Length: 163
View 1 (spheres, helix red, strand yellow):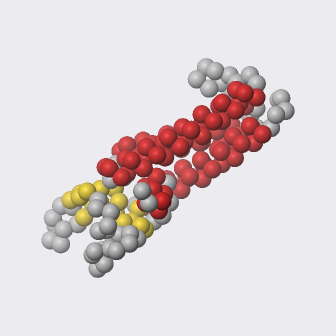
View 2 (cartoon, rainbow, N blue to C red):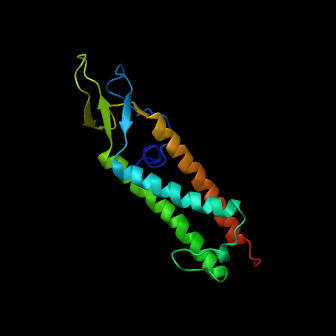
View 3 (cartoon, rainbow, N blue to C red):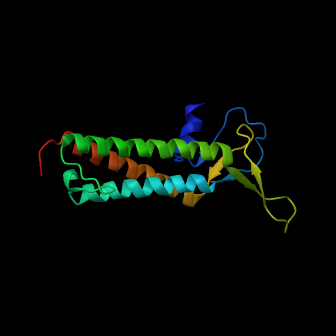
């Protein structure tokens, strides 16, 4: 697994993915179609990170938060809450990578005008892929919110003063 490919498929921050040794240099750039599973993972990332950022931005004490009916009562509870949140983000990013690697397709337009577009499976060495603008924007928002949520989580874990 190459790190550039992993980052492109899991984080999705790059607009264009230029693979080495491209066989068809004169082909037009193809748009990457994200599978539904990858979109669900991104939605989960956005939801979890958004809740943590919201709680941190309003200054909520992590000992006052109730997560799935459980309230962390001490420093150990806050550490577990933060660790589980970080692990959930990592899980969804890795799952997103596998959805993209195995189920992602590209949309090709045939040379004949008026013909329907067709979807083809990606062969990673043959294409120069472009992320659709909406997907690129959503991936950047998810990455930004994840980073902010991790900052709030780390500040909660380091801050040992009771509220």
